[in-house]
Image (cartoon, rainbow, N blue to C red; front, side, top):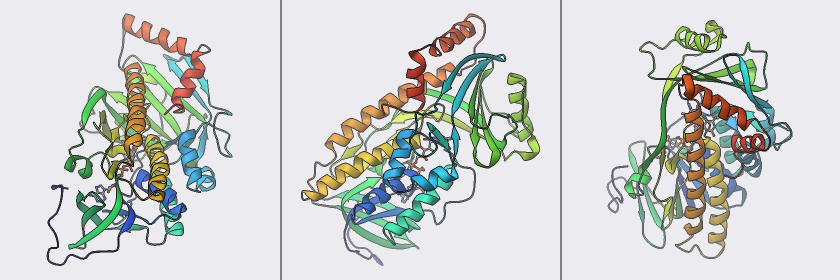
Length: 398
Ligand SMILES: Cc1cc2nc3c(=O)[nH]c(=O)nc-3n(C[C@H](O)[C@H](O)[C@H](O)COP(=O)(O)OP(=O)(O)OC[C@H]3O[C@@H](n4cnc5c(N)ncnc54)[C@H](O)[C@@H]3O)c2cc1C
């Protein structure tokens, strides 16, 4: 999205009827917000540039109790719980010795009774997209790339391209849920500051041979953390922190990293193609200006290591749903997002701090530093810190 506002008209442009709300981006966050607003009968449309979701590996798998409550508000809790697997416990070890345990039993909502559910993001998005289609046929428009937004005071003009042709929409409010490289954020110059917490990881999904199908395993080893999480279908995701990703990343290389640190491993023949990613953290200086708000990764990039960007984005959506409904009910004032900006930026700052702490705990360590770290992790296993840790792990307070 190179420009802040497009010129008027243009060859082949068409003007559509105005909507109450236009959401730019049909990822997990834009879709959930679309469902929430459509469920209230609000005239909302979600514009997504990709023609299809794709079939690759999902980024997120973890759904936390506040996230599940947001999904319940959208009417998809039963379907999500049925498709997901529960993660009921967590165990932290070093050199085969247990440093601490966490139980999520009884903390979560939903029929699972667990605090955390595991479901690949692509499946959750598919459920949300179907729900949006049921609530508001045509509420999701694929193949529409937004190029510019222009806040005109009384409404917002949205200029997009579909099939090479220009498309112009107007809305009372626009939400940019267009991901970490948000064009809306940069065109509105809302700032994007790096925050503490940056490291490299490798990951792959494979068959779960651990015999601990409901337990998250965190190995805090001297060479860096190895984490693994249950997934539906008897599978498990392995994630290892590395100083830098191997030049040739294969299931064998990742299994060797896991084996050398934990003494365990996994069946490489059952493993998906591994991938490397750099966890980084950024926050937008502002999450709203005038009639335009940011939500999800467009507003905050949270490290997936102990941070939960998708769930945090769903909580943005819950707040936006409330604030947009209230604003539309009283004639759509221009300052609808003042509280949203303050409340959700503060939640994002807390999430960033938690994730930075989690990443620091999983850094390579040896000697005295390793002993101090392990002692600190053991301390977290003591009541009442154990309860605090479980609260942090399950995103209470965000
Ligand atoms: C390895 C990894 C693991 C993760 N694990 C977890 C986890 O377990 N739990 C968790 O909560 N989070 C996790 N996350 C984070 C999570 O994946 C993101 O926070 C989440 O995808 C954010 O959703 P979003 O809808 O804000 O953005 P996105 O999913 O990026 O969606 C943005 C959408 O906007 C569309 N778009 C962009 N620009 C335009 C435009 N101009 N016009 C139209 N459409 C546009 C894009 O095509 C895209 O579909 C993980 C991330 C990674 C990398």
